[in-house]
Each structure stands twice: as C-alpha cells, then as structure tokens.
Length: 338
Ligand SMILES: NC(=O)c1ccc[n+]([C@@H]2O[C@H](COP(=O)([O-])OP(=O)(O)OC[C@H]3O[C@@H](n4cnc5c(N)ncnc54)[C@H](OP(=O)(O)O)[C@@H]3O)[C@@H](O)[C@H]2O)c1
Image (cartoon, rainbow, N blue to C red):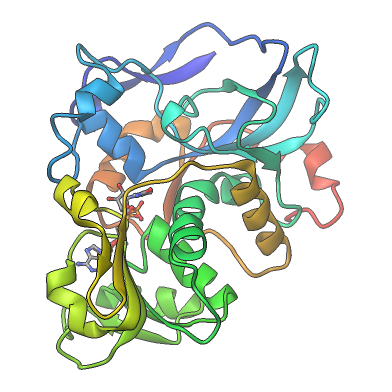
C-alpha cells in the first residue's frame, strides 16, 4: 500500500509517499481502507518536534529518540471496513466509519488496522468521507475540555481564542450546543466563518483586546496558547475556568484551583469511542459540522504539511487518500451526503 512516511524530524519535505506492506487485521482488529484523513497540528508537532514550552526534552522520549518510532503520521480518518479479524463482532465488512487513532497515528496511508473497541464509529449518515475525517482531532479535544473538564453549563458565557482553528471551530459549535453564549476571537479574515458556525459575537484580535474590554466570561478556552491566568484572570467571572488547550509544561504544573473559585485546566485526556459517538449524533442532528480549510490529494501531502505549518488554517486540512472518496454503495446509504 502507499503511505506517507517520515524517517527523521524536520520540515514538511521530510515526508514522502512510499510503498509499504499492507497491514493484516489481528483477531480483534478491523482493517480500514482509508478514504480521507487530515494533516493536523498534532502531525505538525510530531513531524517537527515543535512542542509547547517545556515539553521539548520530553518529546523525543514520546515519539522516538533516534527518529520517529511511528513513521506514518495521521491522527484521524474516515474510510470503509475492508476486512475483519476472526473475533470482530462490532463491525462488518463495508461499514463506512471514522476513527481517531490520535497519537498512535498511522492514518496517512491507504490502510490501517485498528482494534474494534478503539475509537472507531460508524460515519455520520449526512457527512461525506472528507467531512467525517475531520471530526475527531478538533472535536474530541473541544469536547474533553468544555464538557468533561470545564463542565460547561447552559447560559454560561464562553470565549474561544483561536475560534477559526480545528479545535477552536469545534469549541464554538460545542459550546453553542451546550447552551452557552459564545464569543469567538479570530483574525479579520475569519470573522464571517466564526459567525457562520454559531458564535454570538466575534472579536478581531488585531483590533480589540478582550482582556481590556472589561467583559467577563465563565469559560475562556485558549486553543492557541496566547494567554495565561495572570493575564486574563480579571476577564474570568467568579467560578470561571481558563482552559489552556495548548499549554506549556509550567502551565500544566500550575493548573488547578485559583482565588475566587476560579480554575485553570490544562493538559490532555484520552479519547474514547463515547466522544466519537457524541460527535456523530450531533453531526447527524445537523448541529456539528467540521470546518474544512482545503482538500488536497494524497500526492499533495507535503503541501498539506506546509499549510498546517503556517498556523493559519481554518479548521482542517483534508487529504483525499482514495481516488473515489464517495464509493457508490455509500452514496446509497439513507441520508448520505450528496
Ligand atoms: N491539549 C490537547 O489535548 C490538545 C488536543 C488537540 C490540539 N491541541 C493543541 O491545540 C492547538 C490548536 O490546534 P488546532 O489544530 O486548532 O490549530 P490550528 O487549526 O492550526 O489553529 C490555528 C488557528 O488559530 C488562528 N490564530 C492564530 N493566532 C491567533 C490569535 N493570536 N488569536 C486567535 N486566533 C489565532 C489561526 O487563524 P489566523 O492566523 O487567521 O488568526 C488559525 O485559524 C495546537 O497547539 C495543538 O497542539 C491540544
């Protein structure tokens, strides 16, 4: 099979497409023929070892000291189950699915074998393969921070910094779904986009500083790593939570309770199939749709990495791995995307 391989850390050009062995599913695994995947900010970090402050020395221990332990990047995918192991009962051949291998990676390839009880779910009926491929990376992180950790409640005021990114655009949509009033912070170029996905208010960070406005929020979700508790504590209401999605090591160590019942939440969590099912249901109800920056072919994988490296993508950069991203049987599913 073809896979995008990197054998050393570095710029986008360290990635190239090679022929490698096609995996065979173990007894509890499914073999997915990948139709679409994304190049995410997680791929950028693993490829270049660009880490938030303080995590630099730890990163090679995680990803491989002499070079990448997992030479195939790719944290999320959509595709069709081509084969199942002898003990698989949860899925069947031809099921259209999306999956989130996360930092186990391996999605920048034509095939990936995953455990049946891992983060795999049936593809939302109303999303195309490219859309379904872009659900998980931003969606799961936003869900973990807002729902699982900050316990966002209806009526709360939520500010999302980086509202146009993969995590930020998911956070805007999820916070709205939880009944919050949402303000998105983004560049002037992305104001319309962030409004279109449901933000009640948008702030252009080049023109206005949310900290100086005097407004207060119950939750400030910083998906970019541009603020700190010291800088924005007065913009948090009593009981307010600052979510540092892209935090450095020192911020993770200093997270926790703060004066006036405020709190800082940082670090990372484990993705479960429940996260995927929650996002699938929301998508099928028409209340969550991943934002796509652009769609590129598998052959354009280096260009995709270059786009992600700019830090300016809006939503996800999708890679169309298969030449037929919407096979005929999937088009015939009830409610399938046109
Ligand atoms: N903790 C976790 O579990 C977890 C999980 C997933 C991701 N992450 C981290 O979350 C971060 C964001 O990931 P992502 O995939 O969402 O990134 P991304 O898609 O690359 O997001 C960048 C977005 O932010 C905007 N932006 C840049 N500077 C900004 C600023 N000063 N204020 C507001 N918006 C700004 C950019 O547009 P403009 O340049 O046009 O403004 C772009 O749309 C990464 O550092 C990633 O490593 C953490």
